[in-house]
Image (tube, rainbow, N blue to C red; front, side, top):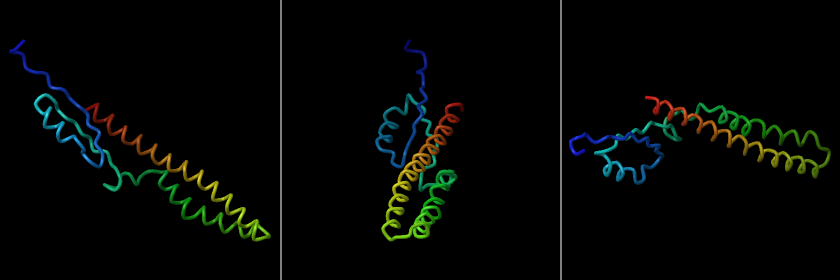
Length: 123
């Protein structure tokens, strides 16, 4: 019916570093839509993203474990060739470990962002 008030919709916007076309969408649908845009911490804004246990593990591995393995290669091997083989093996293993740590860092960040979004939806 013409006399009934128009229903306003609530839209959850999950922004990123750049708003992209969101300004156009806001202006186009502003009369019919209430836009909700929770703040999701992303590097380099804020420090919340630093409280990621995988970031700590990544730094510890990069600055302590990997140099330790490189040094241990010298102590374990009798020949220079074997030292380089052990270092190569340590580097290959490190690539796998670093890959898992970076995946964990992203996973934790996504879970944190989902928590922010969930609380915004509940409000």
